[in-house]
Picture 1 (cartoon, one colour):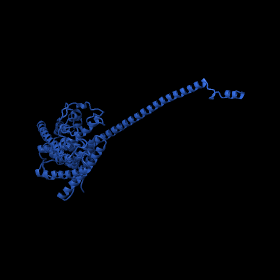
Picture 2 (cartoon, one colour; picture 1 turned 60 degrees about the vertical axis):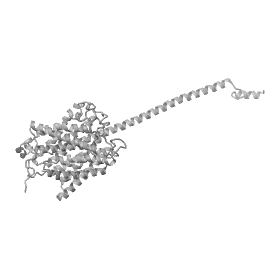
Picture 3 (cartoon, helix red, strand yellow; picture 1 turned 180 degrees about the vertical axis):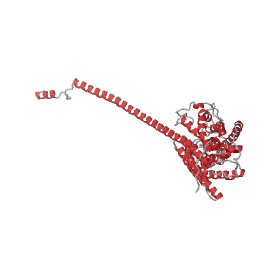
Picture 4 (tube, one colour; picture 1 turned 90 degrees about the horizontal axis):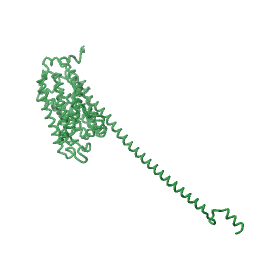
Amino acid sequence: MDLRSRRLSSSFPFSSHSPSRGFRSRIARLLFVLCLGLAVSGTVLAQTQGDRIAALEKQVADAKTAVVSAQSAGDNAWMLVSAALVLMMSGPGLALFYGGLVRKKNILGTMMQTFAMMAIITVLWALIGYSLAFGVNNGVSGSFIGGFSNALLHGVGLVPDGVYVTTIPLQTFMVYQLMFAIITPALITGAFAERMKFSAMLLFLTLWAIFVYSPMAHMVWGQHGLLNAALGGKFPTLDFAGGTVVHVTSGVSALVTCLYLGKRVGYPKEPMPPHSVVLSFVGACLLWVGWFGFNAGSALAANGLATSAFVATHFAAAAAAISWSAAEWMKNGKPTALGAISGAVAGLVGITPAAGFVTPMSAIAIGLITGAFCFFMVFIVKMKFGYDDSLDAFGVHGAGGTIGAILTGIFANSAINPIFGAGKATGLLEGNGKQVLNQFVGIALAWGISIVGTLILLFLVDKLIGLRVSEEDEREGLDLSQHGEEGYHAEMSSH
């Protein structure tokens, strides 16, 4: 090898012409470092992806929790507003409606009867009423009345119970149902207006709330109730917001009470017109608005079912106002303001059991039928038999609740509320003829417990303290004779 070749060899020590061990070891170390780096980076990448997936899953879970929380908050807000709306139906709604219909010497006495229910039933509900209506009766299926499990509101807390409510506190449900318990006995006062002693009214309606209202509420709405359609009752009666529980019981009890007491002094020979249809008009409008809480609130959530009940309620009231006014126009030659508001209230009564089960068109049909039917009961049947149902509590609530409950069994639609399960018919028009029979069972029980219970309680109260004011006190007026005050002091002078 010449000198030039040696220089080239020494200048390129990594050439293939002169492989070395150092070169191979360096390559091996480099490959090892690369493999180790890839392994480490892969582990880190895997951990990073795992963390990202876990974080994403947590975000999804948090979002679901937020949605549920928001739904629960919305439901609770709606139910509290609904409770306030139903209370407004009693005072000032019913107080004004009834107060305007009596003679002016009885306005305070009439309003005080409703206001007294707002106070007394509230305390009674907390002590025992809620438990008797919604408490568990030893888990007995088909029970008639609740037990004492929730007496003094024991166990009625700020979380859902999973039976009656799932997204609102049980305490919200309790106070909402309280408002129904208040207005129901208050409705009865319209039948015996202007002639029952205030003390007798207090005792009678307090006992009535315990022995008539609570059992009926339990049978229709309570756990294991005999008529509860939602919780597997033996005779499932469709009553979304109280057609039987509220209106049939109060209306039938009103009829029994007015018959037991007898007529007002001078009825029907002396004219006894309403002293202020204006007050009654305002009261009826408040009742109409409050009824949205009554019916739509019975969905127990701010959901589509509440919307459906809201719409049905409004449509039925409007339709009934039209049919009552039309019937009055044909019979008497003129439609009256009192007739229009009476028709609207009748429609609200008729749609109460059906509100969460029927379409808007069915609601209009129910309103038209109920308005005409209640007009017939007030102006034909009442006049025929001559009983003194002072403010037509039976003609509107008893008759309206009864016909409304029957029509619910006919028009109920599973597309609105599949209460018996998906794909199962609900009402007669869907092919479930048995439901009409179940409705009659519920109506019969409501009539039966109202008649028997009311008669027994009236008899007991009459024997204990007497029911009726004296003829002298009645002529003077309940405002002065029972309360020592007058609703109106200044008389407007005529010129």
